[in-house]
Image (cartoon, rainbow, N blue to C red; front, side, top):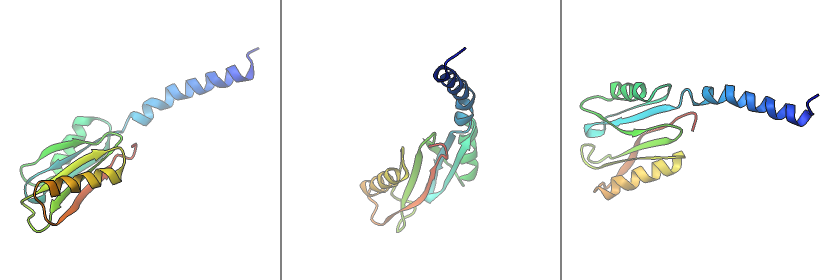
Length: 125
């Protein structure tokens, strides 16, 4: 007879082995940006490359993926007085720090009236 504590520990171990891959299965995302405030984002994809492609498809013009979103958040800020000028982007474990850092980057690059243009968090983050 197996003591209750050992049986419970084994059951929890088995459950974690089954559920861990499910939790990690859809944790890929991306933020793409282009000229003059263009952006596209994708989140909760199963594969990083699929998320990158989806973000690029949503972005109008000549865009590039600038941030991976995998169990975290990303933010994109632009200068609204000159949308084709200064911008900033950032990733962080939580949304607030990502937004603050993106705004800071926009101001550091010469922006005068920086605002958040887009932000996204992977639901698994």
